[in-house]
Amino acid sequence: MAPLTIASTVKLSSGEVMPRIGYGAYRANGSGVYEALKAGYRLVDTAQFYDNEDQCGRAILQFLAETGTSRASVFYTTKLWQQCTTSYAAAARGIDGSLKRAGLSYADLFLIHSPPRSRTARLETWRALQDAVKAGKIRSIGVSNYGVHHLQELLDWDGLEVHPAVNQVEVHPWLPRKDIVEFCAANNIVVEAYSPLTRGVRFGDALLADIVTAHGGAITPAQVLIRWSMQKGHVPIPKSSNPDRIRSNIDVFNFALSDAEMAMLDLDSYAPVTWDPTISPL
Ligand SMILES: NC(=O)c1ccc[n+]([C@@H]2O[C@H](COP(=O)([O-])OP(=O)(O)OC[C@H]3O[C@@H](n4cnc5c(N)ncnc54)[C@H](OP(=O)(O)O)[C@@H]3O)[C@@H](O)[C@H]2O)c1
Image 1 (cartoon, rainbow, N blue to C red):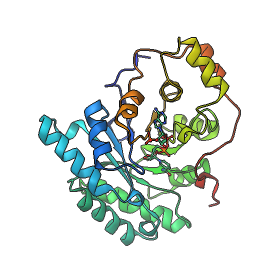
Image 2: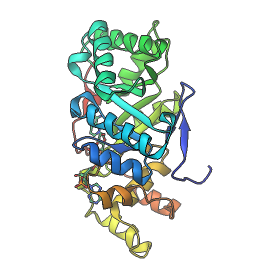
Image 3: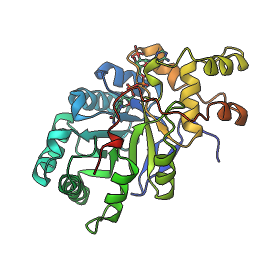
């Protein structure tokens, strides 16, 4: 594998490329997004639910205008919330509403935030996303919080025209999600890792302390977790509203975790720090 750099990307099933690390914008505002872009993040992850699509869009456009950077160099992701995943019409309206709020002519990636409750709702929402791709409103589409059974249903559907590019799920050493990760790898679906820092819950863990010590104390527990995620092949999207932490969370390209350190963090554990809709029944 080529060495990871701040400019590393992964090619999606859509043919588009996505940065290997992103900025998670839940509970963030426009200034956080702007700081992140200045620090070198080129992927912004928001959602209708975060109620900040407008701020994210404005911060991106401000950054592009001030730096002369092209729109194509920033990867913008948003997600359909539950009231927009009840029918084709609700999803189509939801997609248009999101783009309007962000002030962007297209989204790089649009996700279903969590599995809609019925098969009809799941597949009709996907049909609306597919049509938005054909209409040029979205470049790639994917899902979030889908378990293997939800993914299998989508892949088996005879109306599938656009392959899911991404499944965004909570992943970190205490929630490695081996079943979902293996299924995604086998089906050309990139795993985007949310809450990659465990929301800070595990920062005091002895395993992280040992790895920090082995690196002479020159790295932080957050950096260990981001590096773990990237070396696993995931796309982590850490969130911070603090400019110093925003910068340090992407300053992970001057060290690597050894095979032994990766093995130390290879845990057989199921400990979500957020919700877990991946286990919802079909
Ligand atoms: N699809 C979904 O259902 C879903 C669910 C959850 C999250 N997400 C996405 O994933 C992103 C990240 O997940 P998350 O926000 O849940 O959690 P996270 O990134 O694991 O952790 C964020 C928390 O860690 C703190 N933090 C960040 N960097 C730090 C550092 N270097 N040292 C100490 N503390 C640090 C932040 O506080 P400060 O801001 O004060 O630094 C914040 O409280 C979200 O923003 C969102 O985009 C998606």
